[in-house]
Image 1 (spheres, rainbow over the protein chains, first blue to last red):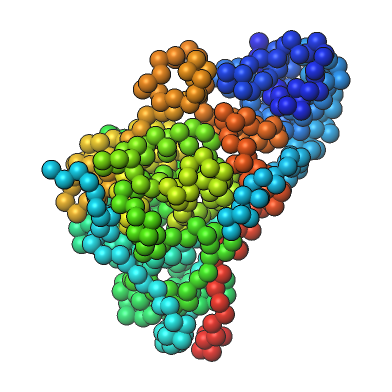
Image 2: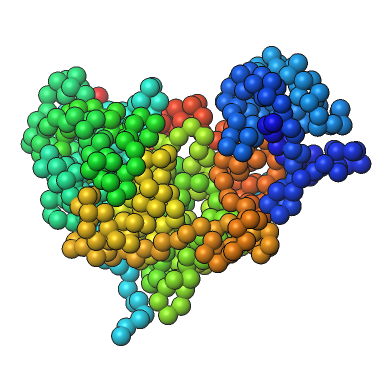
Length: 128
Length: 458
């Protein structure tokens, strides 16, 4: 069996709040990072690794370095299907052509996180 | 016994090199007397810029690499590769060479005794007073620079190849070397945001004096800082004389980098944010930069780092595991081995501070900092015994967090530092270096040059 860690920030945590997924959250870095750990059978692992540039299995049997488009699509499916079972990965793999298209553009641009950076800009302005 | 350090260390070689002509009229006159003109080109590997000799010219002329004054002669190159010594006897790690293709050499027709005007971004930039023209085998220079398992068994584990950026840089050199001293004749202006981090050795020494610093420790970086880096620099700075170091100088290496590294703009500003946000007082923390295309030469690179920072007036240097390293080529503790006992096969049978004409730099070899949930803090590996619970810092893990747009928790990265990464992400459309960024940066470079009209070379 192989694994996939789906990282959860505050927004993603709030997205799954109240759902059965909440009880499946795993702590990393002493709880500072939360993740959903998915089990991925070999057949699905091969499809992911063969289908997505950069994806590989690491020494811990975690699938790493998969395109961000894949990871984002995976979380969206988890959220809507309220599951971390293998059917979620099947659903994501069904969208593989679209994900590959998005992944190809990733080397040039990635969506900028929608966060407020005024604190850092203010500190820079004050120091100037 | 005198414990207190009252002065800054002397420059390597005894005096700071300063080869900048500050008066543009004088620069113009010098340029007009040149025998030929050459437009500086980046060194390419598979069409990607991996190095630009202009950065070496800057670092040499502004004294970062004192006592080196120019492109090395064949005798100096041999001395360096054989025993890491300049002909003057001073320790130095890397070949500094001005290379051109055979075709360009034929076109220029220059020989020893000639003066070559070097143009950058279309403007006169520097002069090379040619002392010697000779040929190298770039592959041989690359191999001898970094070593081999046979010749350097103390630290080299596997032969170098083209997956190693430094080996690639030297292998991609042109075969003709023009040796001689450089002079910058058109004083450059550092572009934003690099300008505020520009502290060449003469200026950094002035700054330290102004601040009353006599004990200063250097932190080498090519990364956006996570809290593990911050713990390292804070704790390493407890060394000093009768009290911890007065100053902590973060010296960022700015130049051509690998795809996937952070952009230099984000690196310098993210380190600055550590003091702007008050995690280390700006009264004690100074962010600076050196122009250099990283060679990732672990122990060899650490020697250059020692020289750069000693020239800047710094007495202590922190060295961690895998210092300036990449891949499996060197022992992960190679830099610490050099600074603890020397590497005889590289010509240093004692640490760099204990050999004649070596360095004044005192190493601070650090093990590892990790996050321990049991201790509830970032802790030093030699203190913490909770080996089953520790969480190691991993650059690739953090990069994947960022790429996913997951806000890194404060235990890994300060929120203000992350905001700086996002600031530059907005600018470049991508959080890390990609082909487009590296190509564009190589056109813009880090400096601007004022127009200088030399009718002879129009």
